Length: 456
Image 1 (cartoon, rainbow, N blue to C red):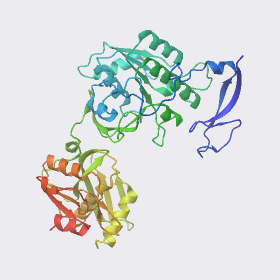
Image 2 (image 1 turned 135 degrees about the vertical axis):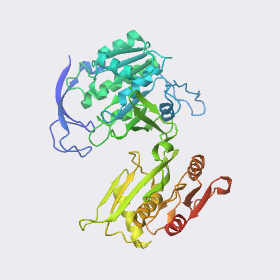
Image 3 (image 1 turned 180 degrees about the vertical axis):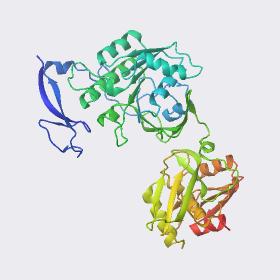
Protein backbone atom coordinates (compact mmCIF):
# COMPACT_ATOMS: atom_id res chain seq x y z
CA UNK A 1 0.00 0.00 0.00
CA UNK A 2 1.30 3.42 -0.90
CA UNK A 3 2.40 5.71 1.88
CA UNK A 4 2.45 9.48 1.80
CA UNK A 5 4.62 11.88 3.69
CA UNK A 6 5.16 15.61 3.66
CA UNK A 7 8.51 17.05 2.62
CA UNK A 8 9.74 20.53 1.85
CA UNK A 9 11.38 20.95 -1.56
CA UNK A 10 13.55 23.86 -2.75
CA UNK A 11 11.98 25.32 -5.88
CA UNK A 12 15.38 26.45 -7.13
CA UNK A 13 17.56 23.33 -6.91
CA UNK A 14 15.20 20.53 -5.85
CA UNK A 15 16.82 19.79 -2.47
CA UNK A 16 14.52 18.17 0.09
CA UNK A 17 14.18 18.86 3.81
CA UNK A 18 11.94 17.24 6.46
CA UNK A 19 11.05 20.68 7.80
CA UNK A 20 10.81 24.21 6.47
CA UNK A 21 14.04 26.23 6.49
CA UNK A 22 14.58 29.81 5.42
CA UNK A 23 17.85 29.33 3.54
CA UNK A 24 18.48 26.35 1.27
CA UNK A 25 21.54 24.40 2.43
CA UNK A 26 22.29 23.29 -1.16
CA UNK A 27 22.02 26.42 -3.31
CA UNK A 28 21.95 29.18 -0.69
CA UNK A 29 18.69 30.79 -1.88
CA UNK A 30 16.23 32.23 0.63
CA UNK A 31 12.50 31.41 1.01
CA UNK A 32 12.43 28.79 -1.75
CA UNK A 33 11.13 25.79 0.25
CA UNK A 34 7.55 24.71 -0.50
CA UNK A 35 5.63 21.91 1.15
CA UNK A 36 4.91 18.94 -1.14
CA UNK A 37 3.46 15.47 -0.71
CA UNK A 38 5.85 12.63 -1.53
CA UNK A 39 4.63 9.10 -2.30
CA UNK A 40 6.58 6.13 -0.94
CA UNK A 41 5.99 2.39 -0.78
CA UNK A 42 4.78 0.11 -3.58
CA UNK A 43 3.61 2.94 -5.78
CA UNK A 44 7.15 4.23 -5.95
CA UNK A 45 8.15 1.19 -8.03
CA UNK A 46 5.49 2.06 -10.61
CA UNK A 47 6.81 5.57 -11.29
CA UNK A 48 7.73 6.41 -14.85
CA UNK A 49 11.51 6.22 -14.81
CA UNK A 50 14.03 6.31 -17.62
CA UNK A 51 15.09 2.95 -19.07
CA UNK A 52 17.47 3.09 -21.99
CA UNK A 53 17.05 -0.59 -22.79
CA UNK A 54 15.52 -3.73 -21.31
CA UNK A 55 18.32 -6.04 -22.42
CA UNK A 56 21.42 -6.35 -20.27
CA UNK A 57 24.49 -4.84 -21.85
CA UNK A 58 28.01 -6.18 -21.51
CA UNK A 59 30.96 -3.79 -21.04
CA UNK A 60 32.99 -3.30 -24.20
CA UNK A 61 36.16 -1.50 -25.16
CA UNK A 62 36.14 1.95 -26.73
CA UNK A 63 37.72 0.63 -29.94
CA UNK A 64 35.00 -1.99 -30.41
CA UNK A 65 32.09 0.48 -30.20
CA UNK A 66 30.52 1.00 -33.61
CA UNK A 67 29.63 4.57 -34.49
CA UNK A 68 27.33 5.59 -37.33
CA UNK A 69 26.29 9.01 -38.56
CA UNK A 70 23.26 10.30 -36.67
CA UNK A 71 20.43 11.11 -39.12
CA UNK A 72 18.88 14.50 -38.52
CA UNK A 73 15.44 15.91 -39.29
CA UNK A 74 15.50 19.10 -41.34
CA UNK A 75 13.29 21.63 -39.52
CA UNK A 76 12.91 23.72 -42.71
CA UNK A 77 14.07 26.74 -40.67
CA UNK A 78 17.66 27.48 -41.65
CA UNK A 79 18.62 29.50 -38.57
CA UNK A 80 17.19 26.83 -36.26
CA UNK A 81 19.11 24.12 -38.14
CA UNK A 82 22.30 26.17 -37.73
CA UNK A 83 21.92 26.37 -33.94
CA UNK A 84 20.96 22.69 -33.60
CA UNK A 85 23.97 21.59 -35.65
CA UNK A 86 22.16 20.60 -38.84
CA UNK A 87 18.71 19.58 -37.61
CA UNK A 88 16.94 17.70 -34.84
CA UNK A 89 18.26 14.26 -33.89
CA UNK A 90 15.50 11.58 -33.65
CA UNK A 91 14.80 10.62 -30.05
CA UNK A 92 16.32 13.81 -28.65
CA UNK A 93 14.75 16.12 -26.08
CA UNK A 94 15.08 19.84 -26.85
CA UNK A 95 14.24 22.59 -24.33
CA UNK A 96 13.47 26.09 -25.64
CA UNK A 97 13.36 28.92 -23.09
CA UNK A 98 12.72 32.64 -23.30
CA UNK A 99 10.88 35.61 -21.84
CA UNK A 100 7.08 35.87 -22.12
CA UNK A 101 6.00 37.31 -25.47
CA UNK A 102 9.43 36.95 -27.10
CA UNK A 103 8.11 34.58 -29.79
CA UNK A 104 8.81 31.03 -28.55
CA UNK A 105 5.40 29.63 -29.52
CA UNK A 106 5.49 31.47 -32.85
CA UNK A 107 8.89 29.98 -33.72
CA UNK A 108 7.83 26.44 -32.77
CA UNK A 109 4.47 26.67 -34.56
CA UNK A 110 6.16 28.07 -37.65
CA UNK A 111 8.59 25.15 -37.63
CA UNK A 112 5.73 22.67 -37.11
CA UNK A 113 3.78 24.12 -40.04
CA UNK A 114 6.81 23.98 -42.35
CA UNK A 115 7.86 20.45 -41.36
CA UNK A 116 5.49 18.71 -43.76
CA UNK A 117 7.58 15.52 -43.88
CA UNK A 118 6.59 14.59 -40.31
CA UNK A 119 3.33 14.06 -38.44
CA UNK A 120 3.40 16.73 -35.72
CA UNK A 121 1.58 16.49 -32.38
CA UNK A 122 1.35 19.96 -30.82
CA UNK A 123 0.32 19.73 -27.13
CA UNK A 124 -0.54 23.06 -25.52
CA UNK A 125 -1.21 23.51 -21.82
CA UNK A 126 -1.50 27.29 -22.04
CA UNK A 127 -3.69 27.92 -25.10
CA UNK A 128 -6.71 26.27 -26.65
CA UNK A 129 -6.60 24.85 -30.21
CA UNK A 130 -8.71 27.82 -31.33
CA UNK A 131 -6.10 30.29 -30.07
CA UNK A 132 -3.31 28.36 -31.78
CA UNK A 133 -5.34 28.36 -35.01
CA UNK A 134 -5.60 32.16 -34.85
CA UNK A 135 -1.80 32.38 -34.59
CA UNK A 136 -1.37 29.86 -37.41
CA UNK A 137 -3.61 31.97 -39.68
CA UNK A 138 -1.17 34.86 -39.35
CA UNK A 139 1.66 32.73 -40.70
CA UNK A 140 1.74 33.14 -44.49
CA UNK A 141 1.54 30.27 -47.00
CA UNK A 142 1.89 27.41 -44.52
CA UNK A 143 -0.03 24.14 -44.64
CA UNK A 144 -1.28 22.67 -41.35
CA UNK A 145 -2.85 19.38 -42.51
CA UNK A 146 -0.04 17.33 -40.95
CA UNK A 147 -0.09 19.18 -37.58
CA UNK A 148 -2.40 17.84 -34.84
CA UNK A 149 -3.42 20.18 -32.00
CA UNK A 150 -4.58 19.20 -28.52
CA UNK A 151 -5.01 21.21 -25.35
CA UNK A 152 -3.96 19.01 -22.43
CA UNK A 153 -2.07 19.29 -19.14
CA UNK A 154 -2.37 15.73 -17.78
CA UNK A 155 0.78 13.72 -18.41
CA UNK A 156 -1.15 10.44 -18.49
CA UNK A 157 -3.43 11.74 -21.26
CA UNK A 158 -0.46 13.13 -23.19
CA UNK A 159 1.19 9.70 -23.18
CA UNK A 160 -2.07 8.19 -24.44
CA UNK A 161 -2.20 10.71 -27.32
CA UNK A 162 1.40 9.89 -28.27
CA UNK A 163 0.63 6.17 -28.20
CA UNK A 164 -2.53 6.49 -30.31
CA UNK A 165 -1.29 8.99 -32.91
CA UNK A 166 2.31 7.71 -33.19
CA UNK A 167 3.63 11.12 -34.37
CA UNK A 168 7.03 11.77 -35.88
CA UNK A 169 7.55 14.93 -33.79
CA UNK A 170 6.06 16.16 -30.50
CA UNK A 171 5.84 19.73 -29.18
CA UNK A 172 4.86 20.44 -25.54
CA UNK A 173 4.00 24.05 -24.67
CA UNK A 174 4.95 24.36 -21.88
CA UNK A 175 6.58 21.87 -19.52
CA UNK A 176 5.63 24.02 -16.49
CA UNK A 177 1.91 23.40 -17.14
CA UNK A 178 2.16 19.59 -17.24
CA UNK A 179 1.21 17.54 -14.16
CA UNK A 180 1.10 13.90 -13.03
CA UNK A 181 -2.00 12.77 -11.20
CA UNK A 182 0.04 10.69 -8.72
CA UNK A 183 1.85 13.80 -7.47
CA UNK A 184 -0.24 16.17 -5.38
CA UNK A 185 1.96 19.24 -5.78
CA UNK A 186 0.94 22.07 -8.11
CA UNK A 187 2.00 22.21 -11.78
CA UNK A 188 5.36 23.92 -12.17
CA UNK A 189 6.76 22.58 -8.89
CA UNK A 190 10.09 20.79 -8.76
CA UNK A 191 8.48 17.35 -8.37
CA UNK A 192 6.06 17.83 -11.28
CA UNK A 193 8.68 19.17 -13.67
CA UNK A 194 11.18 16.45 -12.79
CA UNK A 195 8.70 13.58 -13.12
CA UNK A 196 7.00 14.86 -16.28
CA UNK A 197 10.31 15.51 -18.04
CA UNK A 198 11.68 12.07 -17.11
CA UNK A 199 8.49 10.40 -18.39
CA UNK A 200 8.59 12.31 -21.68
CA UNK A 201 12.29 11.47 -22.09
CA UNK A 202 11.53 7.77 -21.60
CA UNK A 203 8.91 7.85 -24.37
CA UNK A 204 11.20 9.84 -26.68
CA UNK A 205 14.06 7.35 -26.31
CA UNK A 206 11.89 4.23 -26.57
CA UNK A 207 9.92 5.38 -29.63
CA UNK A 208 12.79 7.40 -31.17
CA UNK A 209 10.54 10.48 -31.38
CA UNK A 210 12.10 13.97 -31.06
CA UNK A 211 10.34 16.11 -28.47
CA UNK A 212 10.57 19.90 -28.16
CA UNK A 213 9.70 21.38 -24.77
CA UNK A 214 8.96 25.08 -24.25
CA UNK A 215 10.00 26.37 -20.84
CA UNK A 216 9.50 29.55 -18.84
CA UNK A 217 12.28 31.67 -17.36
CA UNK A 218 12.44 33.37 -13.98
CA UNK A 219 13.06 37.02 -13.17
CA UNK A 220 16.84 36.47 -13.22
CA UNK A 221 16.63 35.30 -16.84
CA UNK A 222 17.36 31.63 -16.08
CA UNK A 223 15.18 28.68 -17.03
CA UNK A 224 12.47 28.16 -14.43
CA UNK A 225 12.40 24.92 -12.50
CA UNK A 226 15.13 22.75 -11.01
CA UNK A 227 18.59 22.61 -12.53
CA UNK A 228 18.03 18.90 -13.12
CA UNK A 229 15.70 19.87 -15.98
CA UNK A 230 18.67 21.14 -17.99
CA UNK A 231 20.65 18.00 -17.13
CA UNK A 232 17.89 15.67 -18.37
CA UNK A 233 17.38 17.21 -21.81
CA UNK A 234 19.80 16.85 -24.74
CA UNK A 235 19.64 20.43 -26.07
CA UNK A 236 18.92 23.73 -24.30
CA UNK A 237 18.09 26.73 -26.50
CA UNK A 238 17.63 30.32 -25.34
CA UNK A 239 15.42 32.68 -27.36
CA UNK A 240 16.20 36.27 -26.43
CA UNK A 241 15.79 39.84 -27.55
CA UNK A 242 14.16 43.11 -26.61
CA UNK A 243 10.40 43.15 -27.18
CA UNK A 244 10.69 46.81 -28.20
CA UNK A 245 12.93 45.78 -31.11
CA UNK A 246 12.02 43.39 -33.89
CA UNK A 247 15.18 41.26 -33.83
CA UNK A 248 15.51 37.98 -31.91
CA UNK A 249 18.57 35.81 -31.22
CA UNK A 250 18.48 32.05 -30.73
CA UNK A 251 21.43 30.71 -28.72
CA UNK A 252 22.49 27.18 -27.84
CA UNK A 253 23.41 26.80 -24.17
CA UNK A 254 23.79 23.01 -24.24
CA UNK A 255 23.96 20.68 -27.24
CA UNK A 256 24.95 17.02 -27.02
CA UNK A 257 24.85 16.70 -30.80
CA UNK A 258 26.60 19.87 -31.97
CA UNK A 259 28.37 23.10 -31.14
CA UNK A 260 27.18 25.69 -28.65
CA UNK A 261 28.92 28.52 -30.52
CA UNK A 262 26.32 29.07 -33.24
CA UNK A 263 23.49 31.62 -33.05
CA UNK A 264 20.40 32.17 -35.17
CA UNK A 265 18.94 35.61 -35.88
CA UNK A 266 15.28 36.29 -36.65
CA UNK A 267 13.18 39.35 -37.35
CA UNK A 268 9.68 39.52 -35.87
CA UNK A 269 7.11 40.58 -38.45
CA UNK A 270 3.33 40.61 -38.61
CA UNK A 271 3.26 37.28 -40.46
CA UNK A 272 5.75 35.47 -38.21
CA UNK A 273 9.51 35.27 -37.78
CA UNK A 274 11.76 35.95 -40.76
CA UNK A 275 15.25 34.50 -40.91
CA UNK A 276 18.05 37.06 -41.14
CA UNK A 277 20.80 35.65 -43.34
CA UNK A 278 23.01 38.78 -43.27
CA UNK A 279 22.90 40.27 -39.75
CA UNK A 280 25.60 42.85 -40.51
CA UNK A 281 23.35 44.89 -42.80
CA UNK A 282 20.60 44.64 -40.19
CA UNK A 283 22.74 46.10 -37.41
CA UNK A 284 24.29 48.96 -39.36
CA UNK A 285 22.23 52.06 -40.10
CA UNK A 286 22.73 53.71 -43.46
CA UNK A 287 23.34 57.42 -42.93
CA UNK A 288 23.11 59.94 -45.77
CA UNK A 289 25.99 61.88 -44.22
CA UNK A 290 28.72 60.95 -41.78
CA UNK A 291 28.13 61.96 -38.17
CA UNK A 292 30.36 62.06 -35.13
CA UNK A 293 30.02 59.57 -32.31
CA UNK A 294 29.51 56.52 -34.57
CA UNK A 295 31.96 53.66 -35.15
CA UNK A 296 31.56 50.23 -36.73
CA UNK A 297 32.89 47.21 -34.82
CA UNK A 298 33.76 43.81 -36.30
CA UNK A 299 32.49 41.46 -33.60
CA UNK A 300 31.74 37.76 -33.15
CA UNK A 301 28.75 35.96 -31.68
CA UNK A 302 29.97 32.41 -31.19
CA UNK A 303 31.60 31.59 -34.52
CA UNK A 304 29.47 34.00 -36.54
CA UNK A 305 31.03 37.36 -37.51
CA UNK A 306 29.02 40.50 -38.13
CA UNK A 307 29.33 44.26 -38.00
CA UNK A 308 27.51 46.36 -35.44
CA UNK A 309 27.15 50.10 -35.04
CA UNK A 310 28.40 51.67 -31.80
CA UNK A 311 26.89 55.04 -30.91
CA UNK A 312 28.34 57.37 -28.27
CA UNK A 313 27.54 60.82 -26.95
CA UNK A 314 29.94 62.83 -24.78
CA UNK A 315 28.75 66.21 -23.47
CA UNK A 316 29.47 68.57 -20.59
CA UNK A 317 27.83 67.43 -17.35
CA UNK A 318 24.78 69.59 -16.80
CA UNK A 319 24.32 68.95 -13.07
CA UNK A 320 27.91 68.81 -11.87
CA UNK A 321 28.05 65.05 -11.39
CA UNK A 322 28.83 63.30 -14.71
CA UNK A 323 26.51 60.51 -15.80
CA UNK A 324 27.52 57.19 -17.32
CA UNK A 325 24.85 55.24 -19.20
CA UNK A 326 25.17 52.18 -21.41
CA UNK A 327 22.68 50.15 -23.45
CA UNK A 328 23.81 46.75 -24.71
CA UNK A 329 27.32 47.11 -23.24
CA UNK A 330 28.71 46.43 -19.76
CA UNK A 331 28.64 49.69 -17.77
CA UNK A 332 31.62 48.67 -15.63
CA UNK A 333 33.71 48.03 -18.73
CA UNK A 334 32.65 51.43 -20.10
CA UNK A 335 33.94 53.11 -16.93
CA UNK A 336 37.23 51.21 -17.31
CA UNK A 337 37.64 52.36 -20.93
CA UNK A 338 36.93 55.97 -19.91
CA UNK A 339 39.65 55.71 -17.26
CA UNK A 340 42.08 54.38 -19.88
CA UNK A 341 41.29 57.31 -22.19
CA UNK A 342 41.82 59.73 -19.28
CA UNK A 343 45.06 58.22 -17.97
CA UNK A 344 46.81 56.76 -21.01
CA UNK A 345 45.59 58.90 -23.91
CA UNK A 346 45.26 62.24 -22.10
CA UNK A 347 41.61 63.00 -22.97
CA UNK A 348 39.77 64.84 -20.19
CA UNK A 349 36.43 63.08 -19.77
CA UNK A 350 36.00 63.25 -15.99
CA UNK A 351 33.57 66.19 -16.26
CA UNK A 352 31.66 64.80 -19.26
CA UNK A 353 28.40 62.87 -19.47
CA UNK A 354 28.97 59.74 -21.56
CA UNK A 355 26.15 57.74 -23.11
CA UNK A 356 26.75 54.56 -25.13
CA UNK A 357 24.34 52.55 -27.25
CA UNK A 358 24.68 49.37 -29.31
CA UNK A 359 22.36 49.77 -32.30
CA UNK A 360 19.71 47.12 -32.92
CA UNK A 361 18.99 46.33 -29.26
CA UNK A 362 21.77 43.74 -28.99
CA UNK A 363 23.75 42.92 -25.85
CA UNK A 364 27.40 42.45 -26.79
CA UNK A 365 29.95 40.74 -24.57
CA UNK A 366 32.77 40.37 -27.11
CA UNK A 367 35.82 42.27 -25.73
CA UNK A 368 36.92 43.02 -29.32
CA UNK A 369 34.33 45.81 -29.41
CA UNK A 370 36.48 47.92 -27.02
CA UNK A 371 38.36 49.74 -29.79
CA UNK A 372 35.14 50.81 -31.52
CA UNK A 373 33.72 52.02 -28.20
CA UNK A 374 36.68 54.29 -27.42
CA UNK A 375 36.73 55.53 -31.02
CA UNK A 376 33.04 56.45 -30.88
CA UNK A 377 33.49 58.24 -27.54
CA UNK A 378 36.48 60.23 -28.81
CA UNK A 379 34.65 61.02 -32.05
CA UNK A 380 31.73 62.51 -30.11
CA UNK A 381 34.01 64.37 -27.71
CA UNK A 382 36.05 66.03 -30.46
CA UNK A 383 33.13 66.22 -32.95
CA UNK A 384 35.25 64.51 -35.60
CA UNK A 385 33.74 61.80 -37.81
CA UNK A 386 35.05 58.26 -37.97
CA UNK A 387 35.19 57.42 -41.71
CA UNK A 388 32.16 55.34 -42.66
CA UNK A 389 34.24 52.87 -44.69
CA UNK A 390 36.43 51.94 -41.69
CA UNK A 391 35.67 49.29 -39.07
CA UNK A 392 37.58 48.37 -35.93
CA UNK A 393 38.28 45.32 -33.81
CA UNK A 394 40.50 44.95 -30.76
CA UNK A 395 40.46 44.60 -27.00
CA UNK A 396 41.79 47.56 -25.04
CA UNK A 397 44.00 46.83 -22.03
CA UNK A 398 44.52 48.95 -18.92
CA UNK A 399 47.82 50.30 -20.21
CA UNK A 400 46.21 51.49 -23.45
CA UNK A 401 47.52 48.63 -25.59
CA UNK A 402 45.35 46.90 -28.18
CA UNK A 403 45.29 43.21 -27.34
CA UNK A 404 44.87 40.37 -29.89
CA UNK A 405 41.40 38.97 -30.59
CA UNK A 406 40.16 35.56 -31.69
CA UNK A 407 39.05 34.58 -35.21
CA UNK A 408 40.67 37.63 -36.82
CA UNK A 409 40.46 36.04 -40.29
CA UNK A 410 36.67 35.82 -40.13
CA UNK A 411 36.37 39.41 -38.96
CA UNK A 412 38.54 40.71 -41.81
CA UNK A 413 36.70 38.54 -44.37
CA UNK A 414 33.32 39.85 -43.20
CA UNK A 415 34.53 43.46 -43.47
CA UNK A 416 35.86 42.80 -46.97
CA UNK A 417 32.61 41.13 -48.04
CA UNK A 418 30.52 44.11 -46.87
CA UNK A 419 32.62 46.61 -48.84
CA UNK A 420 34.68 48.29 -46.11
CA UNK A 421 37.90 49.85 -47.39
CA UNK A 422 39.91 49.65 -44.14
CA UNK A 423 39.90 47.74 -40.88
CA UNK A 424 41.97 48.47 -37.75
CA UNK A 425 43.24 45.30 -36.07
CA UNK A 426 45.69 44.53 -33.21
CA UNK A 427 49.33 44.41 -34.30
CA UNK A 428 50.07 41.27 -32.28
CA UNK A 429 47.58 38.96 -34.02
CA UNK A 430 50.07 36.43 -35.38
CA UNK A 431 49.79 33.70 -37.97
CA UNK A 432 47.81 35.54 -40.64
CA UNK A 433 48.89 37.16 -43.90
CA UNK A 434 46.79 40.30 -44.33
CA UNK A 435 48.16 40.82 -47.86
CA UNK A 436 45.81 38.09 -49.09
CA UNK A 437 42.78 40.35 -48.53
CA UNK A 438 41.48 43.11 -50.82
CA UNK A 439 40.99 45.44 -47.87
CA UNK A 440 43.48 47.78 -46.22
CA UNK A 441 44.45 46.29 -42.85
CA UNK A 442 45.84 48.85 -40.38
CA UNK A 443 47.74 47.23 -37.51
CA UNK A 444 47.96 49.18 -34.24
CA UNK A 445 49.55 48.28 -30.92
CA UNK A 446 48.21 51.25 -28.90
CA UNK A 447 45.05 53.31 -29.02
CA UNK A 448 47.07 56.41 -29.98
CA UNK A 449 48.09 54.71 -33.25
CA UNK A 450 44.47 53.86 -34.05
CA UNK A 451 43.36 57.44 -33.30
CA UNK A 452 46.15 58.82 -35.48
CA UNK A 453 44.85 56.80 -38.43
CA UNK A 454 41.17 57.63 -37.81
CA UNK A 455 41.49 61.38 -37.15
CA UNK A 456 44.66 62.30 -39.03
